[in-house]
Amino acid sequence: MTNGSIQLHGVGKYYKRYASNGSKAAEIFSFGCLMRHTPHWVLKNIDLTIATGEAVALLGYNGAGKSTLLKLIAGTTTPSAGSVHLEGRLAAILELGIGFHPELTGHQNIRMAGRLMGLSGAEITASLNDIATFSELSDRLDEPLRTYSSGMLARLAFSIATAIRPDILIVDEVLSVGDAYFQHKSFARIREFRRLGTTLLFVSHDFGAIRALCDRVVLIENGTKLKDGNPSDILDFYHALVLDRERKAGIIQQTGGQTGTTTQSGGGEIKVEAIELLGRDGAARSLLNCGESSMLRLACRVYQNTPSLVVGIMFRDKVGNPVFGTNSHLMGQTLTNLQANELITIEFEQTLDLGAGSYSVSFGLTDTSDGVSHTYDWKDGALVFELINRDYPPCIGMALLKPQLTINRTSDQIN
Image (cartoon, rainbow, N blue to C red; front, top):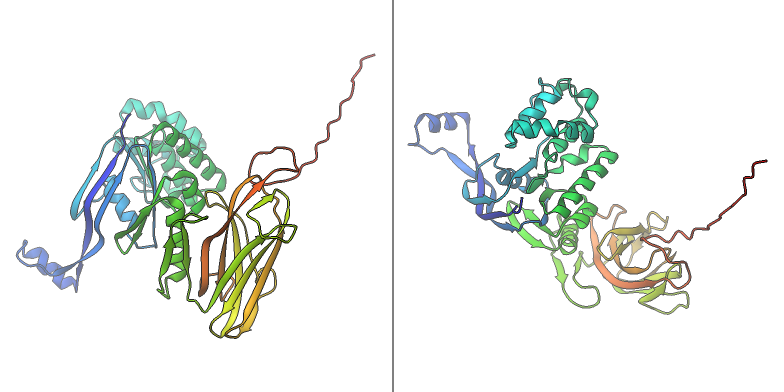
Protein backbone atom coordinates (compact mmCIF):
# COMPACT_ATOMS: atom_id res chain seq x y z
CA MET A 1 0.00 0.00 0.00
CA THR A 2 1.64 3.21 -1.15
CA ASN A 3 -1.19 5.72 -1.33
CA GLY A 4 -3.88 7.05 0.94
CA SER A 5 -4.89 10.50 -0.21
CA ILE A 6 -8.22 12.32 0.13
CA GLN A 7 -9.46 15.17 -2.08
CA LEU A 8 -12.72 17.09 -1.69
CA HIS A 9 -13.75 19.80 -4.14
CA GLY A 10 -16.76 22.03 -3.42
CA VAL A 11 -18.47 19.33 -1.38
CA GLY A 12 -21.92 20.07 0.00
CA LYS A 13 -24.72 18.05 1.52
CA TYR A 14 -28.34 18.97 2.10
CA TYR A 15 -31.41 17.17 3.37
CA LYS A 16 -34.99 17.92 2.37
CA ARG A 17 -37.30 19.71 4.77
CA TYR A 18 -41.05 19.66 4.29
CA ALA A 19 -43.65 21.93 5.85
CA SER A 20 -45.94 18.95 6.41
CA ASN A 21 -46.41 15.29 5.53
CA GLY A 22 -48.91 16.43 2.91
CA SER A 23 -46.25 18.49 1.16
CA LYS A 24 -43.92 15.51 1.17
CA ALA A 25 -46.59 13.22 -0.29
CA ALA A 26 -47.48 15.78 -2.96
CA GLU A 27 -43.85 15.98 -4.09
CA ILE A 28 -43.40 12.20 -4.12
CA PHE A 29 -46.53 11.50 -6.15
CA SER A 30 -45.88 14.31 -8.61
CA PHE A 31 -42.99 12.23 -9.99
CA GLY A 32 -40.65 15.19 -10.07
CA CYS A 33 -43.11 17.80 -11.35
CA LEU A 34 -43.54 19.54 -7.98
CA MET A 35 -40.93 20.63 -5.47
CA ARG A 36 -42.43 21.13 -2.03
CA HIS A 37 -39.28 20.94 0.08
CA THR A 38 -36.63 23.42 1.13
CA PRO A 39 -33.01 22.26 1.18
CA HIS A 40 -31.29 22.25 4.56
CA TRP A 41 -27.56 22.42 3.90
CA VAL A 42 -25.49 20.72 6.60
CA LEU A 43 -22.24 21.12 4.62
CA LYS A 44 -21.40 23.84 2.11
CA ASN A 45 -18.52 24.22 -0.34
CA ILE A 46 -15.90 22.14 1.48
CA ASP A 47 -12.47 22.01 -0.17
CA LEU A 48 -10.03 19.69 1.58
CA THR A 49 -6.88 17.86 0.54
CA ILE A 50 -5.20 15.32 2.80
CA ALA A 51 -1.92 13.87 1.59
CA THR A 52 -0.75 10.31 2.02
CA GLY A 53 0.43 9.70 5.59
CA GLU A 54 -1.08 12.89 7.05
CA ALA A 55 -3.09 12.83 10.26
CA VAL A 56 -5.95 15.34 10.35
CA ALA A 57 -8.54 15.97 13.07
CA LEU A 58 -11.98 17.47 12.49
CA LEU A 59 -13.09 19.80 15.26
CA GLY A 60 -16.29 21.73 15.88
CA TYR A 61 -19.47 22.02 17.93
CA ASN A 62 -22.05 19.24 17.93
CA GLY A 63 -24.09 19.65 14.75
CA ALA A 64 -21.33 21.49 12.89
CA GLY A 65 -21.23 18.82 10.17
CA LYS A 66 -18.17 16.77 11.18
CA SER A 67 -19.82 13.34 11.19
CA THR A 68 -21.61 14.08 7.91
CA LEU A 69 -18.27 14.96 6.35
CA LEU A 70 -16.78 11.67 7.55
CA LYS A 71 -19.72 9.76 6.08
CA LEU A 72 -19.23 11.47 2.72
CA ILE A 73 -15.56 10.53 2.68
CA ALA A 74 -16.31 6.97 3.84
CA GLY A 75 -18.94 6.63 1.13
CA THR A 76 -21.87 5.82 3.41
CA THR A 77 -23.72 8.84 2.02
CA THR A 78 -23.37 10.80 -1.23
CA PRO A 79 -22.68 14.52 -1.68
CA SER A 80 -25.39 16.86 -2.95
CA ALA A 81 -22.69 18.98 -4.59
CA GLY A 82 -19.00 18.66 -5.40
CA SER A 83 -16.83 15.57 -5.57
CA VAL A 84 -14.96 13.22 -3.23
CA HIS A 85 -11.91 11.35 -4.51
CA LEU A 86 -9.95 8.74 -2.52
CA GLU A 87 -6.88 6.72 -3.37
CA GLY A 88 -6.16 3.60 -1.33
CA ARG A 89 -8.09 1.13 0.80
CA LEU A 90 -10.22 2.76 3.48
CA ALA A 91 -11.40 1.56 6.89
CA ALA A 92 -13.95 3.63 8.79
CA ILE A 93 -15.26 3.46 12.35
CA LEU A 94 -18.26 5.76 12.47
CA GLU A 95 -21.46 5.38 14.50
CA LEU A 96 -21.48 2.57 17.06
CA GLY A 97 -22.88 -0.61 15.55
CA ILE A 98 -23.09 0.70 11.99
CA GLY A 99 -22.88 -2.29 9.65
CA PHE A 100 -23.49 -4.73 12.52
CA HIS A 101 -26.56 -6.96 12.92
CA PRO A 102 -27.68 -7.32 16.54
CA GLU A 103 -29.04 -10.86 16.11
CA LEU A 104 -25.87 -12.25 14.56
CA THR A 105 -22.96 -13.45 16.65
CA GLY A 106 -19.65 -11.64 16.95
CA HIS A 107 -18.03 -14.13 14.55
CA GLN A 108 -20.79 -13.66 11.99
CA ASN A 109 -20.55 -9.88 12.25
CA ILE A 110 -16.78 -10.02 11.79
CA ARG A 111 -17.25 -11.87 8.49
CA MET A 112 -20.05 -9.55 7.36
CA ALA A 113 -18.15 -6.38 8.29
CA GLY A 114 -15.00 -7.71 6.63
CA ARG A 115 -16.90 -8.29 3.39
CA LEU A 116 -18.31 -4.75 3.54
CA MET A 117 -14.74 -3.47 3.91
CA GLY A 118 -13.74 -5.32 0.74
CA LEU A 119 -11.72 -8.07 2.41
CA SER A 120 -11.61 -11.50 0.87
CA GLY A 121 -12.77 -14.59 2.73
CA ALA A 122 -9.15 -15.69 3.16
CA GLU A 123 -8.16 -12.29 4.59
CA ILE A 124 -11.04 -12.39 7.06
CA THR A 125 -10.18 -15.92 8.18
CA ALA A 126 -6.53 -14.97 8.62
CA SER A 127 -7.54 -11.97 10.74
CA LEU A 128 -9.96 -13.76 13.09
CA ASN A 129 -7.38 -14.57 15.73
CA ASP A 130 -5.97 -11.01 15.73
CA ILE A 131 -9.46 -9.52 16.04
CA ALA A 132 -10.38 -11.84 18.92
CA THR A 133 -7.08 -11.18 20.71
CA PHE A 134 -7.01 -7.40 20.25
CA SER A 135 -10.68 -6.91 21.19
CA GLU A 136 -10.31 -9.30 24.15
CA LEU A 137 -13.75 -10.69 23.31
CA SER A 138 -12.77 -14.28 22.54
CA ASP A 139 -15.26 -15.66 25.07
CA ARG A 140 -18.15 -13.55 23.69
CA LEU A 141 -17.80 -13.92 19.92
CA ASP A 142 -20.32 -16.77 19.74
CA GLU A 143 -23.00 -14.61 21.40
CA PRO A 144 -25.37 -12.24 19.53
CA LEU A 145 -24.32 -8.60 19.40
CA ARG A 146 -27.51 -7.47 21.17
CA THR A 147 -25.90 -8.79 24.37
CA TYR A 148 -22.82 -6.54 23.95
CA SER A 149 -22.30 -3.27 25.79
CA SER A 150 -21.44 -0.09 23.89
CA GLY A 151 -17.82 -0.46 25.00
CA MET A 152 -17.68 -4.02 23.64
CA LEU A 153 -19.15 -2.85 20.32
CA ALA A 154 -16.49 -0.14 20.09
CA ARG A 155 -13.73 -2.67 20.80
CA LEU A 156 -15.05 -5.07 18.17
CA ALA A 157 -15.54 -2.34 15.54
CA PHE A 158 -12.03 -0.97 16.05
CA SER A 159 -10.44 -4.42 16.02
CA ILE A 160 -12.16 -5.34 12.74
CA ALA A 161 -11.33 -2.04 11.03
CA THR A 162 -7.66 -2.24 11.99
CA ALA A 163 -7.01 -5.98 11.68
CA ILE A 164 -5.36 -5.27 8.33
CA ARG A 165 -3.61 -1.92 8.08
CA PRO A 166 -5.61 0.35 5.75
CA ASP A 167 -4.27 3.14 3.57
CA ILE A 168 -6.84 5.49 5.14
CA LEU A 169 -8.31 5.16 8.62
CA ILE A 170 -11.36 7.23 9.58
CA VAL A 171 -12.41 7.26 13.23
CA ASP A 172 -15.35 9.09 14.78
CA GLU A 173 -15.53 9.60 18.56
CA VAL A 174 -16.68 6.02 19.16
CA LEU A 175 -13.44 5.21 21.03
CA SER A 176 -14.48 7.55 23.83
CA VAL A 177 -16.99 4.93 25.06
CA GLY A 178 -14.29 2.33 25.62
CA ASP A 179 -12.44 1.85 28.88
CA ALA A 180 -9.15 3.65 29.48
CA TYR A 181 -7.10 0.48 29.00
CA PHE A 182 -8.56 -0.18 25.53
CA GLN A 183 -8.19 3.47 24.56
CA HIS A 184 -4.45 3.18 25.26
CA LYS A 185 -4.28 0.03 23.12
CA SER A 186 -6.21 1.69 20.31
CA PHE A 187 -4.06 4.81 20.23
CA ALA A 188 -0.92 2.68 20.31
CA ARG A 189 -2.15 0.87 17.19
CA ILE A 190 -3.04 4.17 15.52
CA ARG A 191 0.44 5.52 16.26
CA GLU A 192 1.96 2.39 14.73
CA PHE A 193 -0.22 2.80 11.62
CA ARG A 194 0.92 6.41 11.38
CA ARG A 195 4.55 5.31 11.56
CA LEU A 196 3.89 2.88 8.69
CA GLY A 197 2.25 5.57 6.52
CA THR A 198 -1.51 5.23 7.05
CA THR A 199 -3.50 8.41 6.49
CA LEU A 200 -5.62 9.28 9.54
CA LEU A 201 -8.79 11.35 9.70
CA PHE A 202 -10.71 11.48 12.94
CA VAL A 203 -13.19 13.43 15.01
CA SER A 204 -12.19 14.01 18.61
CA HIS A 205 -12.49 16.57 21.39
CA ASP A 206 -9.51 15.04 23.19
CA PHE A 207 -7.01 17.88 22.75
CA GLY A 208 -4.16 15.74 24.08
CA ALA A 209 -4.78 13.05 21.46
CA ILE A 210 -5.02 15.66 18.72
CA ARG A 211 -1.75 17.30 19.71
CA ALA A 212 -0.01 13.92 19.96
CA LEU A 213 -1.31 12.40 16.71
CA CYS A 214 -2.16 15.13 14.23
CA ASP A 215 -0.32 17.24 11.69
CA ARG A 216 -3.36 19.48 11.07
CA VAL A 217 -6.75 20.37 12.50
CA VAL A 218 -9.73 21.43 10.39
CA LEU A 219 -12.32 23.50 12.25
CA ILE A 220 -15.90 23.11 10.99
CA GLU A 221 -18.60 25.62 11.95
CA ASN A 222 -22.16 25.78 10.59
CA GLY A 223 -21.27 23.37 7.79
CA THR A 224 -18.32 25.33 6.44
CA LYS A 225 -14.56 25.06 6.86
CA LEU A 226 -13.70 27.89 9.23
CA LYS A 227 -9.99 27.24 9.74
CA ASP A 228 -7.32 24.74 8.69
CA GLY A 229 -3.88 24.80 10.30
CA ASN A 230 -1.45 23.38 12.84
CA PRO A 231 -2.97 21.81 15.98
CA SER A 232 -1.79 24.39 18.52
CA ASP A 233 -3.18 27.40 16.63
CA ILE A 234 -6.54 25.79 15.80
CA LEU A 235 -7.07 24.31 19.27
CA ASP A 236 -6.32 27.66 20.88
CA PHE A 237 -8.76 29.37 18.48
CA TYR A 238 -11.43 26.73 19.20
CA HIS A 239 -10.96 27.17 22.95
CA ALA A 240 -11.43 30.90 22.53
CA LEU A 241 -14.47 30.25 20.33
CA VAL A 242 -16.06 28.14 23.06
CA LEU A 243 -15.44 30.86 25.65
CA ASP A 244 -16.73 33.51 23.26
CA ARG A 245 -19.71 31.62 21.85
CA GLU A 246 -22.46 33.50 23.64
CA ARG A 247 -20.89 36.95 23.57
CA LYS A 248 -19.47 36.91 20.01
CA ALA A 249 -17.07 39.72 20.86
CA GLY A 250 -14.36 38.44 18.55
CA ILE A 251 -11.12 36.53 18.83
CA ILE A 252 -7.65 37.88 18.06
CA GLN A 253 -4.82 35.66 16.82
CA GLN A 254 -1.38 37.16 16.35
CA THR A 255 1.71 35.54 14.88
CA GLY A 256 5.27 36.45 15.76
CA GLY A 257 7.26 37.42 18.80
CA GLN A 258 8.51 35.22 21.61
CA THR A 259 5.45 32.97 21.84
CA GLY A 260 4.74 32.38 18.14
CA THR A 261 0.99 32.43 17.50
CA THR A 262 -1.08 33.68 20.44
CA THR A 263 -4.85 33.64 20.83
CA GLN A 264 -6.73 36.19 22.94
CA SER A 265 -10.39 36.85 23.66
CA GLY A 266 -12.61 38.43 26.31
CA GLY A 267 -15.10 41.17 26.99
CA GLY A 268 -12.46 43.56 28.36
CA GLU A 269 -14.16 44.46 31.65
CA ILE A 270 -10.91 43.40 33.34
CA LYS A 271 -7.59 43.00 31.54
CA VAL A 272 -4.14 41.69 32.32
CA GLU A 273 -1.76 44.57 31.71
CA ALA A 274 1.45 42.72 32.58
CA ILE A 275 2.54 39.15 33.25
CA GLU A 276 5.98 38.03 34.40
CA LEU A 277 7.68 35.00 35.90
CA LEU A 278 10.08 35.74 38.76
CA GLY A 279 12.91 33.47 39.82
CA ARG A 280 14.02 32.78 43.36
CA ASP A 281 16.05 36.00 43.24
CA GLY A 282 12.88 38.04 42.65
CA ALA A 283 13.92 39.09 39.13
CA ALA A 284 11.75 38.53 36.05
CA ARG A 285 13.43 35.84 33.94
CA SER A 286 12.76 33.64 30.93
CA LEU A 287 15.50 31.12 31.85
CA LEU A 288 15.17 29.28 35.15
CA ASN A 289 16.49 26.12 36.79
CA CYS A 290 14.55 22.89 37.13
CA GLY A 291 13.14 22.68 40.66
CA GLU A 292 13.49 26.42 41.25
CA SER A 293 10.99 28.34 43.37
CA SER A 294 9.18 30.91 41.26
CA MET A 295 6.36 33.44 41.28
CA LEU A 296 3.96 34.14 38.42
CA ARG A 297 2.75 37.74 38.76
CA LEU A 298 -0.23 39.21 36.87
CA ALA A 299 -1.15 42.90 37.01
CA CYS A 300 -4.85 43.38 36.21
CA ARG A 301 -6.78 46.58 35.55
CA VAL A 302 -10.53 46.79 36.21
CA TYR A 303 -12.31 48.86 33.55
CA GLN A 304 -15.91 48.20 34.61
CA ASN A 305 -17.59 47.35 37.91
CA THR A 306 -17.87 43.56 38.08
CA PRO A 307 -19.38 41.31 40.77
CA SER A 308 -16.71 38.58 40.79
CA LEU A 309 -13.35 37.56 39.35
CA VAL A 310 -11.64 34.19 39.08
CA VAL A 311 -8.02 34.18 37.86
CA GLY A 312 -6.77 30.98 36.26
CA ILE A 313 -3.35 29.96 34.97
CA MET A 314 -2.13 27.04 32.88
CA PHE A 315 1.42 25.83 32.29
CA ARG A 316 1.90 23.96 28.98
CA ASP A 317 4.75 22.06 27.39
CA LYS A 318 6.25 23.04 24.03
CA VAL A 319 3.54 21.25 22.01
CA GLY A 320 0.70 22.73 24.07
CA ASN A 321 -0.16 19.83 26.37
CA PRO A 322 -1.38 20.93 29.82
CA VAL A 323 1.25 20.47 32.53
CA PHE A 324 -0.44 22.18 35.46
CA GLY A 325 -3.39 24.49 35.94
CA THR A 326 -5.27 26.08 38.81
CA ASN A 327 -7.35 29.16 39.61
CA SER A 328 -8.05 31.49 42.49
CA HIS A 329 -11.44 29.86 43.18
CA LEU A 330 -9.87 26.42 43.61
CA MET A 331 -7.36 28.03 45.96
CA GLY A 332 -10.17 29.59 48.02
CA GLN A 333 -9.67 33.22 47.02
CA THR A 334 -12.45 34.35 44.65
CA LEU A 335 -12.51 38.14 44.32
CA THR A 336 -15.84 40.00 44.61
CA ASN A 337 -17.23 43.52 44.11
CA LEU A 338 -14.50 44.86 41.88
CA GLN A 339 -14.63 48.57 41.11
CA ALA A 340 -13.60 50.40 37.94
CA ASN A 341 -10.01 51.73 37.95
CA GLU A 342 -8.83 49.19 40.52
CA LEU A 343 -5.38 47.71 39.90
CA ILE A 344 -5.10 44.15 41.20
CA THR A 345 -1.88 42.16 41.50
CA ILE A 346 -2.22 38.37 41.60
CA GLU A 347 0.77 36.21 42.51
CA PHE A 348 0.99 32.43 42.19
CA GLU A 349 4.00 30.88 43.94
CA GLN A 350 5.16 27.43 42.85
CA THR A 351 8.20 25.20 42.58
CA LEU A 352 9.05 24.35 38.99
CA ASP A 353 9.44 20.60 39.46
CA LEU A 354 9.53 20.03 35.71
CA GLY A 355 12.01 18.50 33.31
CA ALA A 356 14.29 20.61 31.17
CA GLY A 357 12.64 22.20 28.14
CA SER A 358 10.45 25.02 26.90
CA TYR A 359 7.13 25.89 28.55
CA SER A 360 4.41 28.50 28.12
CA VAL A 361 1.89 30.11 30.47
CA SER A 362 -1.72 30.95 29.62
CA PHE A 363 -4.14 32.95 31.77
CA GLY A 364 -7.87 33.44 32.03
CA LEU A 365 -9.96 36.04 33.86
CA THR A 366 -13.56 34.88 34.24
CA ASP A 367 -16.59 35.45 36.42
CA THR A 368 -16.90 31.81 37.54
CA SER A 369 -14.57 28.92 38.24
CA ASP A 370 -15.68 26.89 35.17
CA GLY A 371 -14.28 29.57 32.87
CA VAL A 372 -17.27 29.30 30.52
CA SER A 373 -20.02 31.66 31.71
CA HIS A 374 -18.23 34.91 30.88
CA THR A 375 -14.61 35.70 30.07
CA TYR A 376 -13.10 39.09 30.78
CA ASP A 377 -9.67 38.33 29.35
CA TRP A 378 -8.02 35.12 28.15
CA LYS A 379 -4.73 34.60 26.40
CA ASP A 380 -2.92 31.45 25.42
CA GLY A 381 0.88 31.56 25.29
CA ALA A 382 1.07 34.80 27.25
CA LEU A 383 4.73 34.14 28.08
CA VAL A 384 7.35 31.48 27.37
CA PHE A 385 10.20 30.34 29.60
CA GLU A 386 12.97 27.77 29.44
CA LEU A 387 14.07 25.37 32.17
CA ILE A 388 17.60 23.98 32.36
CA ASN A 389 18.79 21.20 34.63
CA ARG A 390 21.81 22.36 36.62
CA ASP A 391 21.21 20.78 40.01
CA TYR A 392 19.85 17.26 39.44
CA PRO A 393 20.99 14.06 37.72
CA PRO A 394 19.96 13.91 34.03
CA CYS A 395 16.42 12.63 33.55
CA ILE A 396 13.84 12.13 30.83
CA GLY A 397 10.27 13.43 30.69
CA MET A 398 8.18 16.37 31.77
CA ALA A 399 8.12 15.84 35.54
CA LEU A 400 11.00 16.27 37.97
CA LEU A 401 10.30 13.70 40.68
CA LYS A 402 13.64 14.08 42.49
CA PRO A 403 14.03 10.34 43.20
CA GLN A 404 16.35 8.93 45.84
CA LEU A 405 18.20 5.76 44.81
CA THR A 406 19.11 3.07 47.32
CA ILE A 407 20.96 -0.12 46.37
CA ASN A 408 21.56 -2.99 48.80
CA ARG A 409 23.89 -5.84 47.94
CA THR A 410 24.36 -8.94 50.06
CA SER A 411 26.44 -12.06 49.73
CA ASP A 412 24.40 -15.28 49.82
CA GLN A 413 26.95 -17.90 50.85
CA ILE A 414 26.21 -21.62 50.99
CA ASN A 415 27.78 -23.51 53.84
